[in-house]
Amino acid sequence: MTDRAVRRRRQALYLFFFLPGIAMSSWVTRTPDIRDQLGVSTGQMGLILFGLSVGSMSGILCSGRLVSRFGTRPVIALGTTLIVASMVVIGTGTAIPSAPLVTAGLWVFGAGMGAGEVAVNVDGADVERLTGAAVLPTLHGCFSLGTVVGGAVGMAATAAAFPAHWHLIAVAVIAVALLVHGLRSVPAGTGLSAAAGEPGAARRSGPPVWKDGKLLLIGAIVLAMALAEGAANDWLPLLMVDGHGLDAALGSLVFVGFAAAMTVGRFCGTFFLNRFGRAAVVRASAVSGAVGLILVIFSDSAVVAAVAVLFWGLGASLGFPVALSAAGDSGPDQTARVSLVATIGYVAFLVGPPALGFLGDHYGLRSAMVVVLVFVASAVLLAPAADTRSRSTAAGHGGPAPDDPPGTHHSGGDDSTGTTDDTGRADRRPTTSGDLT
Image 1 (tube, rainbow, N blue to C red):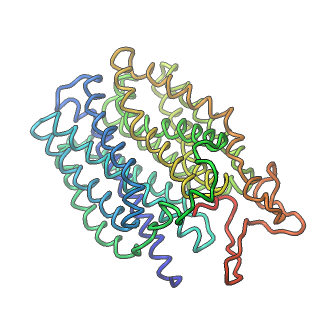
Image 2 (spheres, one colour; image 1 turned 60 degrees about the vertical axis):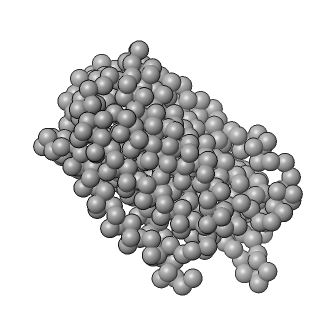
Image 3 (cartoon, one colour; image 1 turned 45 degrees about the vertical axis):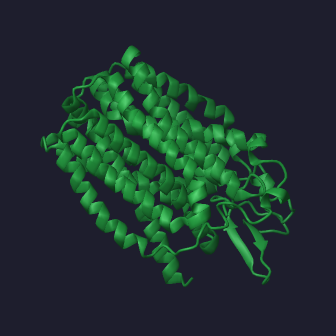
């Protein structure tokens, strides 16, 4: 591919992370209005959100096979189309009102998110291979940027008492145009072999990747941090309304603050990864997230809780992309490793949070977030598992030692991991992004 084609492809992938962020925050910021219009309790809202869980599992479990058979481009198109369609279904269910229809719309959203976003990650990893530059943190940053934009619009719509169903349908119309524009820059064929592995790869790679203890620890990190992100995406406006007495517009504003903190953390993440390494970044992120959750849960001051949400957002921002990079460096068969960790992450992000609604119905949403706090606190102890550079440099190319921050130079090597293809060209990739494909 030419440099221009790669650049347009990268921009299209940014768009395909940006759109789900807008879509998710659009209905999340309207959840208080949607709940009131449906006339349901917090526990019943948890049942409605369970449609998101079921749809997410369907999309996640099918994504690998779909990418393997058809490539990333049609799966990205399918996933994004389902997300767009879900906005119409959720909006229609809100207008009628019909809780089953809203549940069905969330199922469609979950299926599109689960299938499409895994495919975008696979395509993004291929762009990293072509460019030798970190792409995944910025991709996830674009998702967070989308939540900021969608959240800000949702906050304004809530304050103006604009009907939620017309708001969601308008988002769908705009997203269709962006989908058609972006899809033209994504090439066909990517992932046809990468998703399933090369023929005979299973025989060459030894034991299944899920038997790798360190990879499972990385999966535990992404589970904790993705749960922290997903819990905020699903429940934060309601948490601030029901748990801290804010009105719906201010609850949406707090969510926008969370999304903005996530965006800043992800766009600035590469600098801190280069300076301090993955393990230190994951540990600091988990501490920040835990502090934010403690204040949100146990402080009775709405102002303190609103400020603490920023620490929660910064803490949750880098867990997912850093874990994907760590998984790619953790051993052979990188695609299978990244797929496993991505699946764990999306299950935690999309499936875990709706279950908090059942706890929230009995104990209140603030108390339900204690579960999230326990998982995030555990990531502080698991952080060393994210430093997998020792495995990627075990061949003795003079790369950084396990405890060195990326960029440390040793004699006989350079600052990046590298392989040589059959033409003799070095495939140089930065240690911060991971060797994902």
